[in-house]
Amino acid sequence: MASHSFYRGEFKLLTPGTTALLILMAAGLMATIYRFVLGLGATTNLSDQYPWGIWVAFDVICGVALAAGGFTTAAVVYLFWGEKFHGLTRPAILTGFLGYIFVAIGLLVDLGLPWHIYHPILFWPKHSALFEVAWCVMLYTSVLALEFLPSVFERFGWEWAQRLLAKVTPVFVVIALSWFTFIMSHSWVWAVVALVVTSILAVFLPRLVSAPGGVPILLIIAGVLFSTAHQSSLGTLFLLTQDKLHPLWWSPLLPVFFFVSAVGVGFAMVIFESTLSSRNFGLPIEADALAGFGHILFYILGIYTVLRFVDVIQRGHLDLLFSPMGGLFFFELAMGAIVPMILLANCKFRHQTWMRFGAAALIIVGLIFNRFNVTLFAMERPGNGAYFPSPEELLISAGLVAGILFFYNVMVRNFPVLVDTQEPHSLEAPNPDKQAVS
Image (cartoon, rainbow, N blue to C red; front, side, top):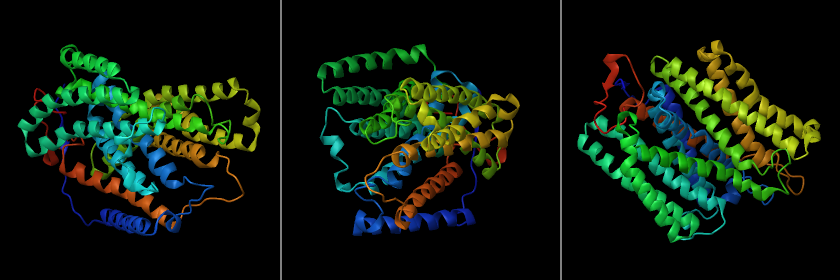
């Protein structure tokens, strides 16, 4: 594998862009303090009719899906030998890592009793989708941190830390997967089985599969497993709402729909973020790699679209497609899957930067619209009231998005994240033989 050089630019705290982000973050922080001082009732438009609002629909349900680029890119690069996509890995992992951190912050703000957020660590219900999601998110965030640490070590030249990380990571993965198996199954037998299997993989898998840059391949597998589990389990959560969620959206395949759409939007987010980063930092766009992601996206969108229509037909709700809610269903699919799929089907369009970017943007908007449909718009409510987020709710959500953008800007300007061919502004990556992600 060819070594990469990485962008490292001058960071100025107070530019017009960062100033705007800091203002939004400060406003979000003030609204957060206000929320904790006065409580949910005084600061939100939530009610018994609408107990879940924008903080769940956007900050959490959408946020988790939009952060899926980390595991999708890592899976393509390290498990399917997508060598040409390797330059997209670090920014995707950074975006995912920041996304999950701010999802956790958003969840903390939304909880009625936020001081009980530690409960999933101590109390283990046997039948709870949210319990599984909580543990998967905690463990996957740890995986993302370990995947990003090599960038930190390279920045400061800590080769000893990289070597230590390479030794410690497989041990962490074995323990994490075994522990997760135990708390999900409540069985020491299955935990021991998982311990034995993962230990064998930790010993022999690196000899069979050589991952780029010496990345522990078991760490990538763990990330994919945890991501698959919690992305699908968010869909499982809504299986409980069969008598409330409109039949065009409620389906026994909801876990599959949530997972497939998250995989698709993960690739779309990489295209979206990489295009904007290249323009913002004056770097060349990795056109071939992004076009390759567009090609993958075409098939994912096709699978998702077929599954949605076949599911509606198989459950006998074809007539509902011609109802007013059917218009919402068609608009969601057209914007988030069908139109982008048509654009990405054309090889020429896939290699045009702004056509590809437009398709990715449509997929992202379509995913957000889908999650809002499932959480809010297609959910039957008692009474005739309506919900619109309060200024505090909007400010906190805007502050979270601003925080992701601000810290992404800080990290890519100070750490080896974005691939750069412009030598005067680059930071050379270490030799691939060293235990680091390059």
